[in-house]
Image (cartoon, rainbow, N blue to C red; front, top):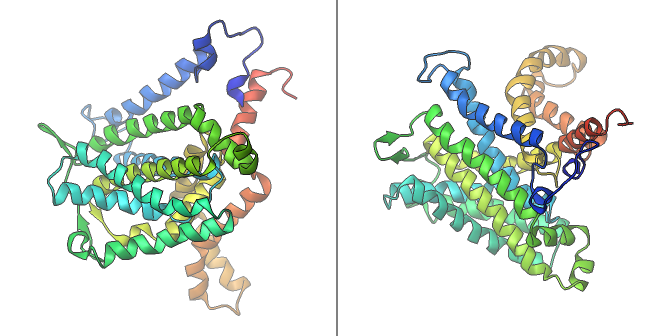
Length: 370
């Protein structure tokens, strides 16, 4: 939206400028500057080489978590936001990537740099298999088909493959190495996770600008009309499932090597629903939707809800004396999260990214933004 609008008096003079993501010098300076700031954050942390304490090391771990989840939600955005195919099994695909990377590194002795792309490809193939029902079903029925993945994949990892996945027990994951370098902490993993997250976000944005991406959008808007225009709807749906699972596989592999231990409890159905919530809050079908939604949900879960939850735990038992206080305390966190999600669906159904686009357009059109 806002990328097609420039301030008054600024025009595209070359074809390269017309197709570029950042069309003005100010946009390029801002984008590159923010990326450089991201790369400099570990240097001014507690564990950085400069010995400064401007940024706590715990914040780097939070940024790593957000960056990994951005990759997963960005993959879901390609499928749900741009292609219109609902998926309730994204956490299961992430589990495939995580366990594939761990097994390739632990059992076969592969390096992280080889296990990462291979686990992503394995997850993409699994995504293709569960994308096959999209040929005949869509909407609610497709959601049920993808929900099957959320039950089938963990069952396979827990029972038939228990000898190599440890079943319900935690699975240790080797530490990534590159020659003499060992990526054993948040600072070291930061320089793998964050640049890769930025790269995959740019890759997803460029995919949407290609012929494939435009076909995704056509399928989302009206698959019957797209088919009449000569678009192979089933083929592009499968591509969307493959790319979505590929992104989930990368996120799962990074998650495995970041935590150094895996458990099936980390990839339950609630995680898939949480991914959908991140996408809805951030804005499905917007390039920055994954970033806004993931950042907001992590901030909500780790900062906002822990801050206000004690007040609700003290007040609600007095307002609802007929309800067991133990049940109230246990329900506060998920209830607050659900209320926030409902609020976004009512007030801002298109997500934070849509509001951000409107703000940018208003700024570019000033003083006539009204």
